[in-house]
Length: 290
Image 1 (cartoon, rainbow, N blue to C red):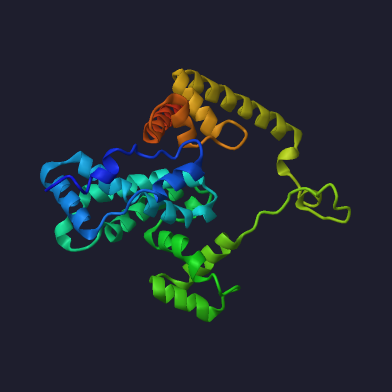
Image 2: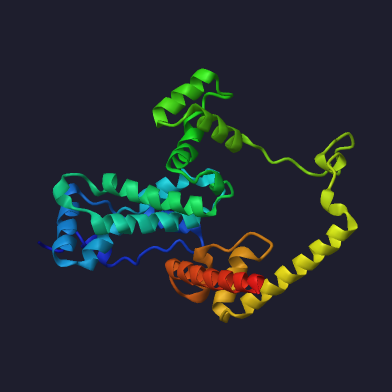
């Protein structure tokens, strides 16, 4: 095979979703698409010869697909750049497993892997992840929002239809719909709302009893000290990553922002973060058991 199919990519750097996300999206959208023949030849080269340059071309030509898919998951409140990063990992897994002899285009095959990787990321990080622990709940978690988009408040017939479509129980549909529809409300009255009435005005706090306040302060102090000791056990880079991602008190830094800061890949930042969190968790559990 000639290298013609690779030439459009050989002279191009791999785009990084760091710094300006808009610039990254413009960059991947400007990358050339592969014809069916070019895609088949490149995939065969990678399959037969482990040709990494061929794999690179396959990945780069489908980066725009990841951006498009990741955009559809913005409703979960996670950074677009991080969703893209996870989707790119799924794309690379798809390229690794793609067999051109199956007679399907890579785009169809890759969509499953991209979505699967993004799903796992959302389930690891979103605040409602704890309600999606079974296979049926996961199916509901990712499908209910779109299925009820035009239904408003669901009737018994709507619930039955969705349950039948997704092969789950009607009560599971109702429970998930209730949780996903829950809205955050202000605990206190807004400063400019003179007639407002908020939970702070009528909810009793059982923990306000003096002995509980003292006990809570002691526990909080112990946890803070345990956390500080765990942070001190990390090397400077790992500590900077953990603090920027989880303890900054403001908008958390993305993997890509930290990748630029430390001049490594976003995947490397994720690995460092995971290892640091695992180490901290063990130290804090050991301290609590002592």
